Length: 206
Image (tube, rainbow, N blue to C red; front, side):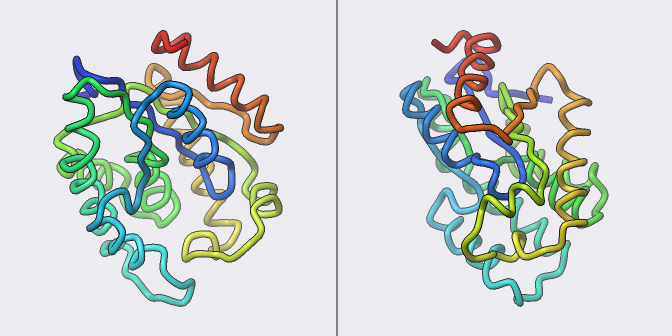
């Protein structure tokens, strides 16, 4: 697998719904002075795709169409935002990336995980993060904490979200050099402290 190369460093925060990814990604990017971005929807095209992908809970979308739209969003995101930033020597912190497709469309939806991985490999030109931080929490606990409205994925049943969580943990266990699991079921300040220790140890970020 490729990685971000000799330019900036590429860090991704992954995890299920309402585990605090966006909050922690924003904190880390600000702390590091890195570019902050997210998926799906990190580009102008991506915003349109995000509306199709997340939309209202009742929208019907074939699972293969879903996976392909996610890959299209990622292809544009890498070409337009992530790769240029890294090549210019800037660090990038991203809220969701390839791991989300593997966990949601692969383990969650039941598509072949290797096929989903190949889609993302093609879409990104083999660009993998230097580090993936998985914020792990029981999905029922996360839903109770989240509140508010539900998009297409949030509205799915607990069995789906349990498969997603199990998939994430399997991905992390299979690639410990790239993935680190952080317990997200704690106060945000404690989670931040763990993230700070991880990026210091893995990347030398102070």
